[in-house]
Image 1 (tube, rainbow, N blue to C red):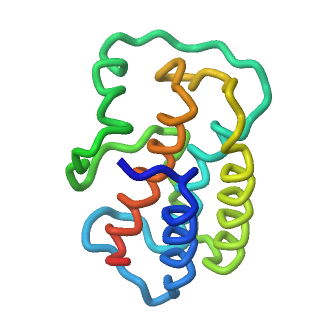
Image 2: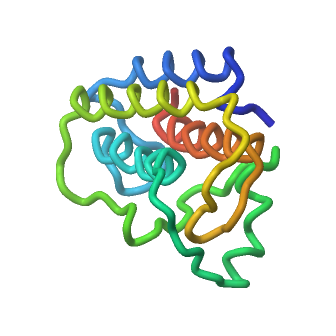
Image 3: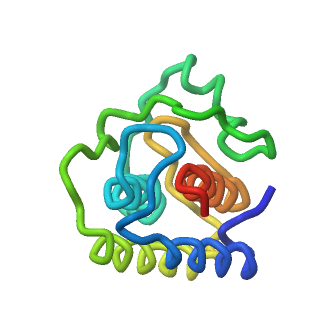
Length: 146
C-alpha cells in the first residue's frame, strides 16, 4: 500500500491535486471539486491535531479499520461522516492551497513515532497513518478522474 510518507506518493498526490480545475466533475458522488478538496482536509486535520482526544469506542466502526490502510480499493459512494460532509460551495484554488499546506505538514511528520489516536478508529502506527491518508486522497482523486 502506498503511503503519503513515501516521497514519490507524496509528490504524486500533490501533482494530481494540482491538475484539478473548476471544470473537474466527479464520476460518482454529490460533491463538486471544491467541496471534495475541503472534505479531504478533514482526515488530515485529525492526523495533524495535537489536542488530546478521547476515542469513541464503536466495535462496528472498528471492524472496518483494516480497510482504511490495506491495498483493497474502497467501493464507490461510501457514506461520509456527518462532520466531514461539505454542502456549501468552496473556492477550489483557496481550498487547494490549504490542502497542499496540510499535506506538506503531514509529510514533514514522517519521522514522528508517536501519534494521537484517531477519534473513531483508535491507534494507528505511523505506517498506517501514511497509508490511510494516501488511500483517502487517492479515492477522491480517482472520483474526479485524476
